[in-house]
Amino acid sequence: MSITKKEVKFNELEREIYKYCFSIGCEMIKTMLETYDEDLSKSRNKAEYRHKGKRKTVIKTMMGEVEFYRAVYEIRDSEGRKTFVYLLDEAMGRSSSGYYSGMLSEQIAAASCEGSYRNAARTVSEMTGQTLSHTAAWKVVQGIGERIDEKEQQMAAIAAKNQGNGKLESKTLFEEQDGIYLKLQGKSRKQHGAGYEMKVAIAYDGAKKTGKNRYELTNKVACANFETTGKFQKRKEGVIAGTYNVDEIEIRLLNGDGANWIKNSIMDENTHFQLDPFHRNKAIRQWVKNPDMQKQIFKLLYEKRIDELLEYIEALTNSVDEKEERENLLELLTYFTNNKEGLVPCHRRKLNIPPPPNGVDHRRMGTMESNIFTIIGNRMKDRRANWSINGGNNLARLLCLKHTKKLPETLSSLTTVILPEKYAEEITINFSAHDIVNSVGKGYNGYHQAIAPAVPAYKWLRDLGAIKALSF
Image 1 (cartoon, rainbow, N blue to C red):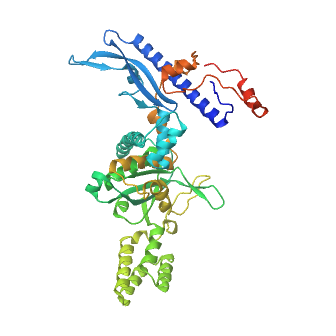
Image 2 (cartoon, one colour):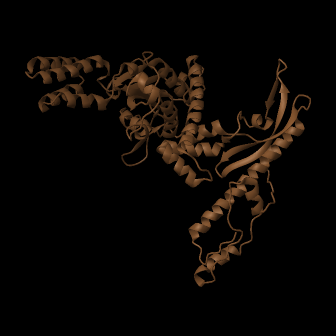
């Protein structure tokens, strides 16, 4: 590496070394994959797989694009027709030429959960050896989202047969559900209108204290989708059964805003519904403007005198003179009548709730308004964002996993490629920087030597250059 400038800024030096290390990594991956392909070629059934030469392909990695050659083979199918296969692609679980590595896919997915696809592409491009477009970031998220969907569909089918594989045991399960309207685009807009409700559900077994007045929900799972009520409830049950041993659950407590699709998820007498306190109190303040009326309504609610409460609101509708005020009171009366069984919070009913495990508290439900913003709203609502049904569903799946701290684990399981054990051993590759540029073409393309300025202020840089080079 050679820099002809009289002075070298450390940032420039760091950047050049960064690129140089990327090029070395790309060359190592290229060598490993081509060696693996040679091993597969030698061990194949030569009578079945006829070698037809080699073809170039590209794998996009954190360090840059790795171009390498792998053998293509001619085989005959059951009907005697010719077809061509790549044993290396099959061994790595790939079916097409040119793809993203697992680590790069994870970085793109994680960045896409934080901001727009354009910002995600910019962030990943700055931190890796890749140059991504926002379209490329979008495609990666769609691919991962579709694979997560397949996994959730499988869990839903297993849960429907009461064969969930969840291991976590809890006698009490808290569930909260709500919907959020998102703007649609393209064909989805023509089919469903300008906005469409995405259903969101979370479940957890309690809360643990993380600060003086702060608590964190424990063992939380979440799912979100634009789909119909029946399909969403199956998906939700699948996600729950994928973590929890549902056979051990003795009681479920459900919190929601009273929407029909939420109450339809009540499947047996062990599930108890409560009207979400935020929506309940908001309805009172929105539809009752008189402070004295508000005070009396809250008093009756707190004293659990629900029948008297409904009678009081009905009497108010007949006593007020203004048409608008009467209509508002009727709205409140209808809302409370439809959700009469949920007006008293679960923690104030005489329910036989099993005690929580050590280190976990049973807190009052009512976190959904916060969760629906942090899971979906913060990323997908406003910001002039518009979604297709499939595109919104795919990103929402990643957001749910991110919010429940399961995204890294899930992405790793979906994108991992297993190489033989021998490739875990130390590998020595001898090559020059000139060879790297010729072989990879995407790596460091700069100088061969760097000369530090001969001034006292740059003594540290000359000392750094005196360190013996590492060999790979």
